[in-house]
Image (tube, rainbow, N blue to C red; front, side, top):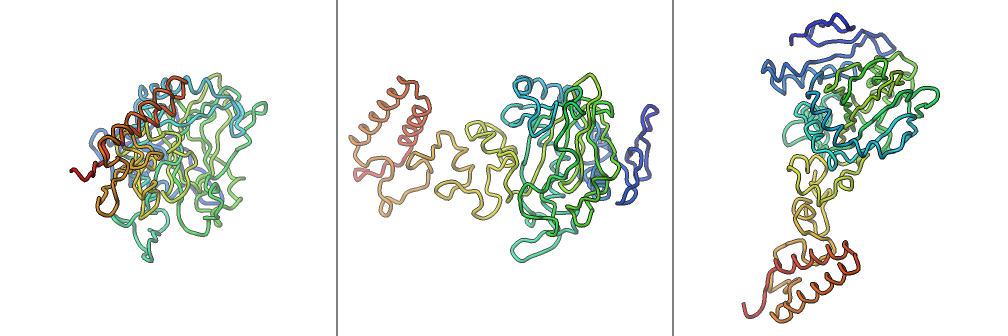
Amino acid sequence: MTCIRRNDSPFFTSSDGCLEAMKTTNIFGNHELCRYEYDEVLSGDLDIEAFAVQVLNAVDRHGFAVIENAVQGPACNQVVSEMRSYIEATPHGLHGLGGTRRCGALVARSASSHQMIAHPVILELAKRILGEQKLNGDAVRINGREGPGEQGFRYPWQLHLTQIIDVGPGGGGDDMPHQLQLHRANGMWLHDFQHVGIDPQMEVMWALSDFTEENGATHAVLGSHREAPRNGTGGYGEPTVQAVMPKGSVMIWTGWSIHGAGVNRSADRRVGMNINYALGFLAQEENQLLACPPHIARKLPEQMQRLMGYRQPAAALNYVAECQPPEDSVLQEDFDVLVPGAHGHVMNPALDGPGFAPENEAAFEAKVADLERQKSAAIAVDDLEQALHLKHAISVLHRSPRTTKQQ
């Protein structure tokens, strides 16, 4: 990679081609916050995989890495614009973060965020860090087999958290302190993963505004992902490096890396977007299936549906009702778990009977009429949820197989 030193900043070109922040030495050794320019991909000098490998190696060595200008400024502005009403309607101080507003459900609320959530380099890194466990000696273990992750032998992973973090002037300071200071993020599943030898999650922070030292850019304890034990406390007293980065950049780290928000000493708000990914067999920090329910998710591209968890990541994991994967059930138009026959499974007339639709034509018409009457009554009393349920029932009834003796 070709990187140019900037005279107005502490960054310089290293031997392996990345831009580095000032070096730091701590109990974990000598480290630097490596930085890479996404322009190398856009210009065609590097493909996505080669670029991701360089970033991966930096995360492996130091626990953190930055990709500058991974998206353009207008894309960041659009996300903030789409989320503005939600941000302004959210109180400060959630999660004990003084002077800070946090709001999530970005997949449903901000279409512009999708290009960052599903950014090709970020997904490539998640595949390697989570799916293939590349930072842990290729420690994939599935059904008695252990070895390097590869196609057909990877852990499933999915979207774990989407959140705008908007820090106002003074946020994190003495008058508006952050109760959640330097921390690791792998403790939420209760089970102690530090001796298991895996990375449960990968975290990223997108700069939707410039991140500067003055406005409290994220602090990182470099090398802390290698502390032994991995959930040790030695790293909390070590010096930090701040992730100063321009709007449109993103910092990547692991759930074992110690980090925390800085104090905003500027007169402006610092706006970031925290997007995390985790192994697909662990509970999500932000329940994506509730934050973006099926009636919204079914209109999204398949990649985003699967990333949120609308899929069966392995065997019988995550099926719906009558043993169906989400794409064949809740993502189908008019699916309603309270409507018999909504599953759409093929019925065997000789063995299963007629199913939801009556065999007799007169009985069929009577059932349709009764459901229509109930729907009208629900609308009349403004019970729109019940009316929608009955609409689904009518739709399922019309498409259910008619296995009458006359046929």
